[in-house]
Image: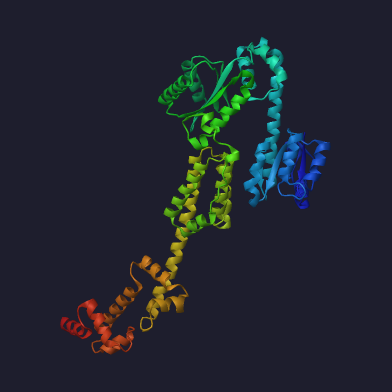
Length: 519
């Protein structure tokens, strides 16, 4: 069974996890708990656990410091880090020490058990691989050539000490110190099957003049080449491979090319090619990437990136997708131009993503929080932008609907007030805004026109004239000054007559006579 140590300064958390989790059911044994990094390191020195579950924020020595110190002495120990919401952004610092599991607090026992089970499975796979390599060391010469190729593949993708070189030289019948070689990695884009990987491998074997090794590694296809031809010729061959493959399968591919070096440094060249492939994040899918394309990515030269997330959040709350979309484009353009390391770029996106989803109601915020894992898996900045843009649009449009409903409620209240006080000669935009709704009159006026399509003053005038016409038609003997008083013109019947004529073409008296003649 694998040994586990719990580290957290909150005793209730360590005791809770110790009791709730069924350690034996996942092939582990809890050896103890610690309250901080200092106490934990002392236990680690004595007990040498396989897995450490640690909080990030602790007094004395925090979780990140503990990871760094343990890695320098016991690099084989695996960590599961627990982080609060505000600490999530800088948890990525532990990636350089191989930490792959981060759990957002609070988390339940199932989440923790899943993470531990995954680590246990990694241990088993690592043990299996090491056993396989040890076995192959003694039997390679007597097995099929395919087995020899597999071991050479292991030599390239894993790091080996110099003391092993003589053994491998005999097995491979290759001088590992002399030849100059280059590594090429192909990665297919979009959805593809393993048969597609073998197809491009076969095409490449036909096009490339000479290669020492070709094999699949995970979801990539690796070629170890003699460095015999000019780079421009190699580039042309790779373009031919890509074009031929696309013609058959309509699947694009990204290619990474390492610098040259000795076979003894094949692992370094492989990691260099992987680094190049990683920068498809910035350079886009379907290209050919070399070390020259990423040489200027020097962390010491990286600029600090500042972005005002509060301004962005205000735009989201306004419900104006046009403005938000423009700002999303601006944000990602800045990140693309800076070309920070990929984890730093993702951390800035996560920071803005977190600020944006905190605008939502708790239920919606939790729903968007579950998308963080999906965001972290995205491998190009174009796809990262598309993902972020989709969520931003969804949240912005929800605020647009909320604002519309809110505005409609206000304007309905204004219309109700107008009808209730139509006979009040003090009825005006400022009176309604200040005395009835306690709002800014200019803002209310703009909102009223946006909702109704009509200025407030025009609306009242039209309503009063319509009411005057109704009174004239219903009451034949009604006086002009009585109408003026009933519809809010007070003691100014002459002004009422002028307004009435402007809108109807008749004075009230003329309109009354026309109405009677019509009868």
